[in-house]
Length: 163
Image (tube, rainbow, N blue to C red; front, side, top):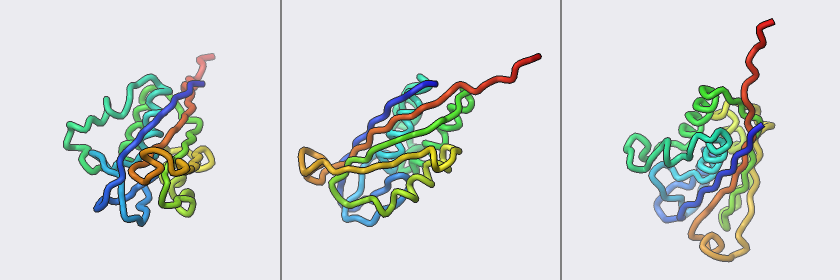
């Protein structure tokens, strides 16, 4: 078994969609970035890539590459899952915490888990998404951004034994 850790943070700005776990959440602000800036998917991707020692999302999806401009981060996550399979790894589970002062995202967590599970090709029971505020402290606490921390566990695929 191998473990990986991921982290992502983006600013919240007006006139931008708020997308977390592939779910568009109605809100006056959205996260800004080269892709859709989905901090949850980005943290999951980095955790998985880290577990396999395959670098990070910046290496695989650089913001200098126009192919990734405004792309759905679920597509990036799907690519990461395929990269792990190509490198002989199975995903055991992923777990993340989103840190966001507003809006409340509890009503959307089930869909987030389903989207992430589908992108990764694993059962929804293997995907955990939690949320917390920053208790009105700092950059996130005053409503200027959001972050996510994630962990992932993977294992090397068992190759059949020649008997």
